[in-house]
Length: 300
Image 1: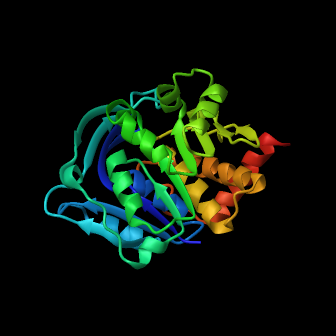
Image 2: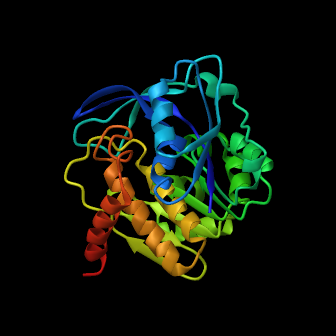
């Protein structure tokens, strides 16, 4: 079944141990869509400025991402200037953030998109996420991502969104911020009580924990020997997770386990290149081959 995502489409300027890159296509919705498109039809909702390169638009279209609700406004595209110090790819250093047209963005969707059953709220301000949800007509399944900035600055709005979703994907640091718990199982249980019935806590290179009332499980990350750029890995993970669940149209334990394994596999491709360099050319043949290797690590 179709999937619609609201998030950012950005220009990323990244410095890392393996080099510097400027004006890469980034943003939560872009990374999410590049992953989810492998499983289902993806509709992207976001805004870019007049300076956004047409080559990035063309790439998204070539990959089958629906851009009917990607608007181009007067002004500059949201830009992030960041750095990863050599040997520490878990911590992104932000040098500057330019909101541009994102600063007063109000999401818009076409009439036919309002009835898309599967919705993912990729990382964006919770106030904008709430506005977007009001546009949708009784979605069947809603997923959510957030970040430490919104938890610190707009906590009450984050809590409001959490009450309206089925699935919450966040990292271990964000889980601790929201719940005050350092133990991830305790944090997951508290997050469940705050609204979402399915909780996925990402632990970076240490894997992922899934929790719901009926069961929980944990998987390791796929071992990558050379990390180039981890920007967007979490969004890529979420795209694989939601993409597979939308394709199967099931939320069983078996489907959730497979969705998390696919998500973990796709995130491992993302970190091996700058921007979407590794995820944009991916085929399901390549993804399945690596996923089968990961399955052997989990259950020989």
